[in-house]
Image (cartoon, rainbow, N blue to C red; front, side, top):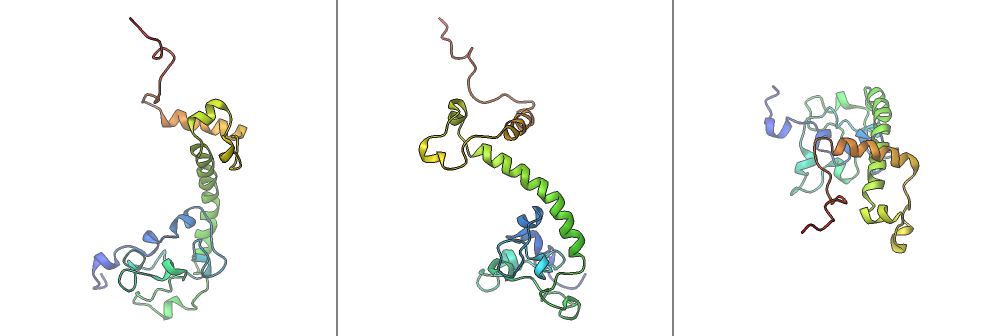
Length: 174
């Protein structure tokens, strides 16, 4: 539509940004160079069409967001006038950022529960103990973790068999 190659300018910067996961979880940087999403410090990535985050700037290296900078929309036809003032949150970011904070907070909590469980071996659960070298790393699951895990595993194994052996399988038959 703008006479630019679609393979270069078909997707938004945000779609391939290495910081997009932080946006999804509602975590935003409060200064340029922070590791979190840079929308609130003036990044226009969610609306700018360019593949700089996946292609890189020079010899496939860099790209504003990959090196700690916010996207200022330099590849867009309306640049610089429609993207000024630079390094100030875009007008629509207030609504989208706050929505992302609310929804992302729930997503982040569920991921943390899953991570805590998945960072334990089945043997540790069976023994109800963590070996001493690992014990310093967040020991036992909380009651909330156990309830969440119960429902998580119901969904995980719905319509399929659980891995491992049952007591019947362990008996020897002649």
